Image (cartoon, rainbow, N blue to C red):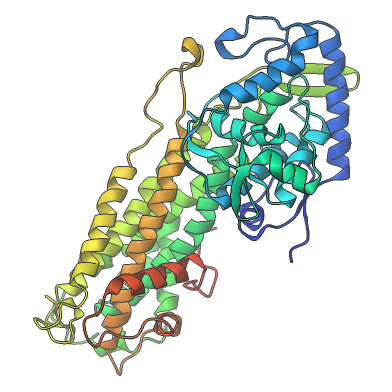
Length: 512
């Protein structure tokens, strides 16, 4: 088991998020962070006692911010905030996404800028410890003023209200509290707002998407290398000098990775001389440029997500220096710094899948007289249809990816009677990205299925050692095609291999 993740105010990593979300790594609040939380809370309470108007602390919210709240009702308004804002719709978030959301909320609060008590952070961690997962409807956030609705459903569970997934069942969260001897928390001034006023949904799902993309991109690179030999393409377009002349880091890294993956291939030299073909189609020849561009876009987006994994996106923020306590209102909750990169990721994966589908189509047409494959890789064309419809499935996925790639962040709808008049819609971006990764994974799985079969037509020649290892991994669960059978199960099997990291490049290849 992993050692517990200590929330000490530092930035989380994508690996941290995935470990907690998918492997249930334990999380604890660090002693220094607990001390900072207590100091920040004490300073804020002194400010509250001074009677100054402070947004969301002793005022209403959004367009109701000019309404002052009596001191004896400050806890009530926070509780009412949570209840009123728990208005999400749609299917609940899956368990891993819910855990990631809760982790990011706790980590942000633990940085001591939100003015909450340490007990509030520990209450969130108690839910994670016991795997009490609030039912969080997936839709309802516009990605500004925080991911309000989803986070309100998490906060509702802290009050002992709403429903939760616990011990394999969905039930009122109060039952799990009783079963475990836990007690709901009583919110104090500012704490309800702090719970819901952050970009934690889009960042949590974005972090999990990056983890999945790492494995998908590895599989896509292996599939491209397999396709080069499966299609009997040249490797001339991988020439290091060619890519140095272009100066783009992603294509340079992809070309280098493909060269290493194909190292030792006996297919390449078998048709290097006296080959009448002059150039391969773009789906092969421009693979480093296309996949490299996607690699660079993914790296840029990951950098912004890494920044957000160490951020505080609440409003207002509390800054304590000596005896001074400043409560500063701003727009850190606005999701556009994350929404734009998420939209770029959607476009990037569309190209990863799109060029893979084109290679599948090129191979299955069997139109290249220099390649000894049959139409659709059929054992007997006509009697058997081979992988004809596997390409249809890949094409369908690519079409849906093209629709999902439309950026959500370019649209605007206003909220809160117009005072919140420019929203990011980053949650829409990340939901579409999550769906898109699954579709792209299916397309790459189709390519691996088809190209592994194409390599059977090249025997006794062999590809590079790393490519042959991937083929052996596929063949451990997916036999070669000797007669028509439903490809759906084989595609699903390879999808699972990708998801589990079994199609991983055996060396570090990404551009630094």
